[in-house]
Amino acid sequence: MPKQASPILFTNAALIDGVADEARPGGHVLVEGGVIREVSDRPITARGARVIDLAGRTLMPGLIDCHVHVIATIADLGANALLPDAIVAFRSAQIMRGMLMRGFTTVRDLGGATHALVEAIEEGLIEAPRLVICGKSISQTGGHADLRGPVDERDFGYQARRLGALGRIADGVDACRAAARDEIRRGAKFIKIMANGGVASPTDPIAFLGFSREEITALVEEAQNAQTYVAAHLYTDEAIRRAVECGVHSVEHANLIQPKTARLMKERGAIACPTLVTFEALKNEGASLGLPPASVAKIDDVRLAGLESLEIMRKAGVTMAYGTDLLGPMHRHQSEEFVIRGQVLPAIEVIRSATRDAAKLLRMEGEIGTIAEGAQADLIVVEGNPLSDLALLTHQGAHMPAIMKAGRFVKEELR
Figure (spheres, rainbow, N blue to C red):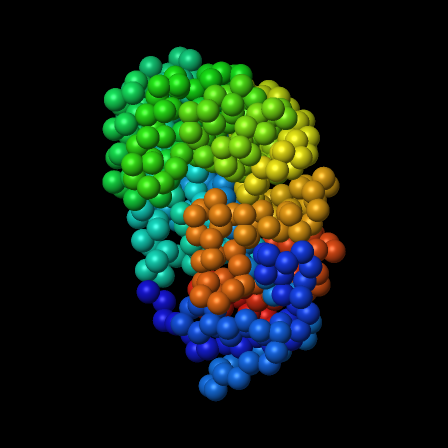
């Protein structure tokens, strides 16, 4: 484990704490032992601490991206699954370091990352965000994680265990139960399923429904037995409603949701994780980066409804976490989701989606995504006020002179 730094006392900060609607001027925050020890609007006395006067700069929680694929090193996911594990691991380390340098101190992987990567981060072998994994996503044959084309006759097992594969196949209730149990055994903190057709897979149009109701219900039960939840890849209104009725808690994407289903999500306490930036990136760069033509043809089926879906879910009162779902070189667009959402949502709600609301989805409320006593000292310093200009959170961290994860600076350029 990396050695803990000496106590740090931030003074005269404008605090965006993930709770208040506005930045609070004149804030003081004491960090010690990797956690936030004290937060006050009055000066704090801390003998032996290094004092950093932020002179009115914004101090806010480290950002949380609730939908990433850290092992998706190229846009062609079928080809990615055939890469040597070592190549994927080294590329993944670079991808995650880029995320950290954009201010993302925690990310939730939605298919592919293994517990070995989590251990490498915890041991300090990789400089990366805190990583919360589902292991391999679970798909039916021909579903969104089955990347074999219509003339590929190989058994899926040839790629299922590779680090570069996003998912595994399970058909039938018993196989679904076994797959969920196995992913939990291998370190998964939640279960991810492919319950709808998708863009990046070759044989499932967007409207296709993944799994039977009985299979989804079994997967949900296995997750609940392990004291966790199911996240599901979902686009169409029909697929979302069916999944939520079966007990799915985390609705990924949700581009084609309609008001009645959004109200059902609110009633059931389900949380949405939209990922609008990936569709813009795929539209602009996917073909040139190797996304197969069959996938390129499906992008606009979901891209064009993205902003409307945010408005529908906000009106219904659905909690929305921050997600990006980017692939390969497109990971550099990760922070642009802030600006896209800011077209239709208030800035404070967009920031909460990557702080307080994201922590709620990860079931880490009070631990991350907040500036509060006892929370992890995941903090970023921003030049300017992101509530006035969300673009300050973009440009690869250029407006973030300091980034701290668990009480240690991973970037410090304060002057």
